[in-house]
Image: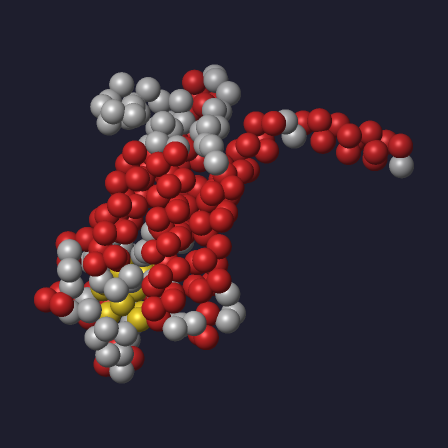
Length: 47
Length: 194
């Protein structure tokens, strides 16, 4: 149990500020692209 | 989907480039994150929610345009980021053609025939909505027809999608932003290259 907690703590330390920022950037850009782009795909025609 | 693939391709290119050059990957420094979430909310409700069928067309069009204007604001606040200027141009083109055509992206019956079976297309009247953001319009009834969803991949390509010039610029901008986040090729506030 102690080992698992130590591993978890180590993994959490590896998630630094830049990783969090990259996730935010990717989510923001994905929303920006979905929101501003207007392509019509084969499967997206049915409403 | 096609736009999100530009995002993934840009990120992969950026990561490979960073590894190859021995430098850490630099995340683009975007600001005002909250704005993009607030801006997307109207679209989420009228386009992607299960209750989307209940909304009148005028409300959907108004929400789409309002959302796009706010997303333009987000892009404009972040125009210092490389690639964002290209993306802003794409947003402006899409916004212009949609505003001029009742708030939706026009697509001609000829282009739509590559995406929908012919017999189903015959049931759809010109002026009717098609897909989440498009409207079926004859080219002669379309304002800024050259900005509409008029481009298609080759017929042999397995994924068929109609896209606009604005979509192309948006995809290039997003790709560039993630592929070369620290690139010196960016536009300053005065719109000149540095």
